[in-house]
Length: 200
Image (tube, rainbow, N blue to C red):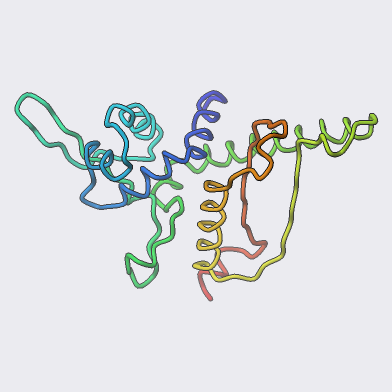
């Protein structure tokens, strides 16, 4: 996948509207654009472009088509992106890229992760150079936090969901201060081999 396509995929995955569409389309039977528009309180015309992009990148699948007079209404689903719990209960699904998507796009996702990590390192280096050159750390555009946790798989997904909700709804308490566009990525990982976790 080219760097332009990877950047486009990264923007899609970071788009709050895209994540809402993925959540709403989590049905095996699928959902139409009109139904999505009603759920998301959007005009259907505002959804056609992101849905087409999501389909192009494999984040949505067309599961059926409805013929209405001379028009063809497509039905989309994101259910294949979700991982189900071992007992198969829908309520225990993890909102995560599921097996099917990873199998088809694993190399692309790995390359995307490496590109994003490179961007993080470049941003960090710029801020280090700025401060070492006499700049004020209050003007820095880089923040970093690390935590050591011990969670179940379900707990990990729930934490990620809550962090996403908090960032999506966060209101800057200092709206009159100068603001800059920022990128935020949340990575939760373990050094434990997933194979050993599967056998546990």
